[in-house]
Image 1: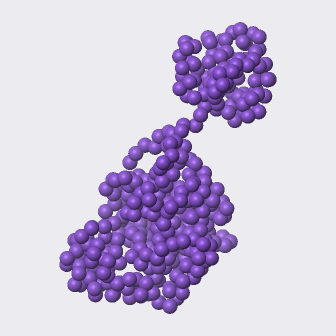
Image 2: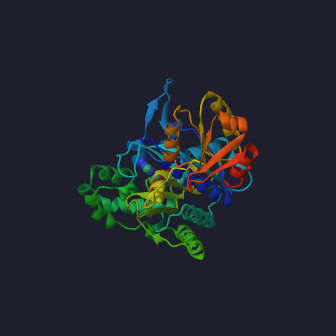
Image 3: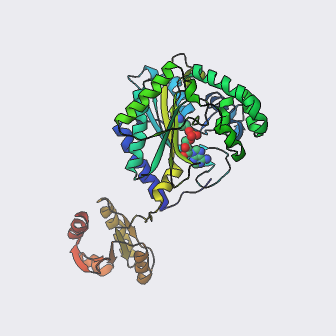
Length: 410
Ligand code: HAM
């Protein structure tokens, strides 16, 4: 877990503002869910056998004995909220976005934190492949808006329950022979949830995983058709992608479309975002009505890293530094600063007794303008505004000063 400090925090704000803009264009609205949920939500939603639930959650017992967990992701929470508040009764699809911290007790490395931030969106209420393509289009628009290029979109279909059951059977059969040579996690998964073998990260297991059958050969007719239509919609939009049959993703709720985007700045291991369809998740969480949906979550820490790559971030410059000379001037300047801030300019008022030190500070803060105010200036009601770029100094009346600063700084 880490602190996010200025000037980097400004990039976080830029990224969030860009995301809100794109979400608005696609008519998504914000949802905020609690950071704590009952542990059972993630166990049922994300899946007991996943790394997230079996190894990485921050879980604790509350004072009343109930088990709570710091959310490791937000899709299960959004679905919980959707069901609890009967959002299915609202008109149309529920298109929701969120931003906020998630918690996973992973091994820390570059771009991987135990408290990390996601920007995500969920479109709930339709199983149409058109929605899949639109969600992917939105993700691409968002990355483009923040100035990221050179990313790679990987897509796959993990099929519906029926197709997956057949694939799991085939994997189980295949793994009978191979699994004993694999890591202990894979040996267990080969029996409990063979699909999870595909997200094993142990390097020695990879050649064996490569040889396992592809899920795409096990899709039933409807699933294959759904996947074909998603690709067709992407082709229409000229969004390029690579079909990656091993992309099953690390959460159990996926059905049909899954996708990830990787970026050079982070390496192939670290996806900048991941998402997919989760038809059936709502029913798993106790919903009586079906709520097919699709969504994604961007790793904001990683997105910011990619944005910052090769660009020096500068602190937001200060518009005006006012140096008051003496107590009387300090009172006067405080009020004057208030008026100038209402023009939407950033202003700092010095509190040092030494003028020289105040001017040094104004320089360090890279103030665009400085204003020195003493009793004489107050009496005469004239203000000497210094342009720090040109070194030029000009005298203004109070009104003149406000007009000059208000008019894009004179
Ligand atoms: P996920 O693949 O587990 O999916 O996480 C999405 C993204 O969050 C990852 O691609 C990565 O960028 C970021 N991320 C995950 N763990 C960490 C970490 N420890 N440190 C930094 N970044 C991290 C989900 O969470 C799903 N809820 C996505 C989704 C939404 N599927 C459907 N709707």
